[in-house]
Image (cartoon, rainbow, N blue to C red; front, side, top):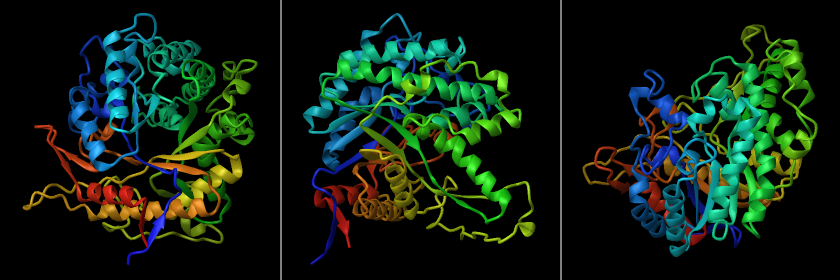
Amino acid sequence: MTQLIKFPENFLWAAATSSYQIEGAWNEDGKGESIWDRFSHTPGMVKNGDTGDVAIDHYHRYREDVALMREMGLQAYRFSIAWPRILPLGRGNIVQAGIDFYSRLVDELLAAGITPFATLYHWDLPQALQDEGGWTVRSTAEAFVEYTDVITRALGDRVKNWMTHNEMSVVVNDGYISGGHAPGRKNDFVGAVRTGHHLLLSHGWAIPVIRRNSPGCEVGAVINANYNMLGSNSKADRLAHNFGDGIWVRWYLDALYGRGYPADIREKLQTSAMVPADQWDFIQPGDMDTMATATDFVGLNYYFRGVTRSNEVPAEENDQQTVFQMPKDDVNWTEMGWEVYPDGLRHVLARLYFEYQVPKIYVTENGASYSDAPGPDGRIHDERRTHYLEGHFRAAHQAIQMGVPLAGYFVWSLFDNFEWGHGNSQRFGLIWTDYQTQQRIWKDSAYWYQQVIKQHGIAE
């Protein structure tokens, strides 16, 4: 008889998506332009010139998609709301058609016995607000509160799990430093720290509004934290590792949990002239207390391990050198070029709990990109994705045994979809999508996940 690794009774098995990546209908029913509409229509910004104009047409096919979720056995579904579908200009004029779409989606989910988890901001800022300065100005944080009030008043009677922001550090670092995401700014460190500040501030401002409009709800934010290790024990590598961890993880978690911004990172930003001392006037009295407004959970997006190697000292000159060599093969690397390292998830979950005392954690994204397509038998044999998920589920279970309060797991993603700057070239889905016909086909990993949910566990 097969022995199962069983998960706690109330543990939720789920999947996740985001609005711009699946909805399409980019300019229908009064929806305004988002920064990702503008970015993807700018030549050279997205691979192959792909856009989210149609994506997987979820806006028109949501009933079909919810039926697939029900068949799979999903107990919860994480989706995001497109701000410009509700307030085309970011504030002021409300589009009822946008509210009605999400209301119908929520009703469909509840009728299917699926708990809705709504993310308020998954990167599709109204372009009208970007034209006023976007997240670099305080007024955008104020507009976010107005938007939050509108949509939570409409859905708060039925949606009882809310996430304010998805991956603030990605919005900041990819939007203002690398330029790989909308709005596509490069090496704008002042804009980056201002953006991070106003994202965190808007999170804190929004929480009491959500609680007022959705009595009995739970609220949190979603952070991304991969498992990063030192390339060696050299001083240069340690400094580089500490700075990377600071700008990607500690800057946000420290602020969310009442520690303020990490002093070492702020000092580094100032002394390096990336953000001069006279450029911090955007921090106003009371802001840090607002950011630390109590939340009920944290969502963790985890994908891979990274190894930090400073570019300041040649590897051969590093003292106490330890170089990590990972084989480049189909098992250890996804097609995004990310290393498959399940045990890193256990480490990061433990860090969240033991270092920050997070009361409840959800894995809100975890998955792998593999391009397996339908074979001669019509099936999609994506064993690598199944292998990836199984390893990470085991790591999650180990974290639970350590005492980590992990409450659920949202696989990324339910469907193949528009993968930001990679366009349609990367496929993360449990369900394969034909972007021409919009046909949905279950992958083998979807059937496997269906069994995991049914058994509430994985085989020993």
